[in-house]
Image 1 (cartoon, rainbow, N blue to C red):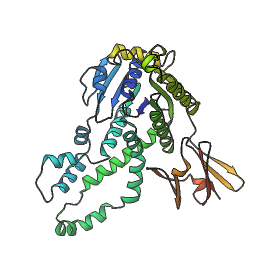
Image 2 (cartoon, one colour; image 1 turned 60 degrees about the vertical axis):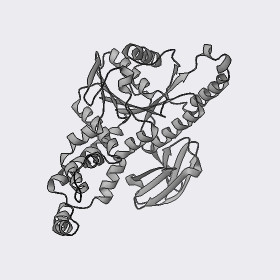
Image 3 (cartoon, rainbow, N blue to C red; image 1 turned 90 degrees about the vertical axis):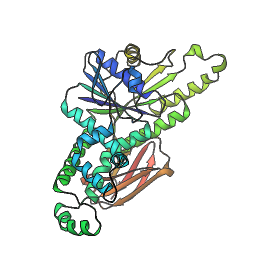
Length: 386
């Protein structure tokens, strides 16, 4: 199964572009499911059909669903749910607030990703298209497996024996329940699934991300930041779609000033993403809604192309031998050097770009070596080891 994720700043038309792509691919004979992970769903509005947490047939070969994190939470992790609920109501009565708190921050993203993994494992579709939430939430979604694995490995050394030993003391003094074997079983199952999910999401032969932008400076800057953050977490971006380009005929009178702004913005996009396929869509004279319109738009964007293919594959990480030892290189354009921070602890390094941080274990070849320097040049971070 091929997995394509669409992301972009809020309001750029990401949902419409994702839906148009799904319609085009389905019309060419592949069985397609489009999924919305955004908690403020608008996929139903695009198709003008009420969607739910279960796949609904839109047209021949095309199905759609909107993930409901509360339903997924209730269905997937009964023992963990019950344990957390016991903790929440240990010293109070059960209430609707307690049930709502079971979907704690970050868990919505995890549930969405696990739903994607479950759909992939079922193998019922040829292509899965994911309409992600706006950029910030998408980054939370995409980095969650990596962070979850790190937290589980570093901060979950509480074994069953330790929990059993502490159980009588904790329950007697603190009046809160300790996890049972069933809860530990489910946590281990969750960890295993997240580990498999992480491997899947980094498979560049299966998963790619497409960034939707508009020809406006603020939005383009957001697209560049997204591109850099996605590369930090080793995700492959295989296309950029520029939406809502003013047609030449409209750049008259009141909109005449937009002509130079738009031209400059498009030049910036082509220069910045020069190796990546770039697709353009002019501003429509009507709303981008309903299957027939979406299918036509999908054909315009990907004219003469197979939109389901991997359109571009970039090598994000590589190691090269240098005079002083080794250079660990990360392809991360559009970064201001002042925003970069780097630290090493044992065989693990942490890279921070503004408020985005990633900690990961170094390749085996570099684990016994120390960082002696780093430089950022022409969109590439080079970390020198000796």
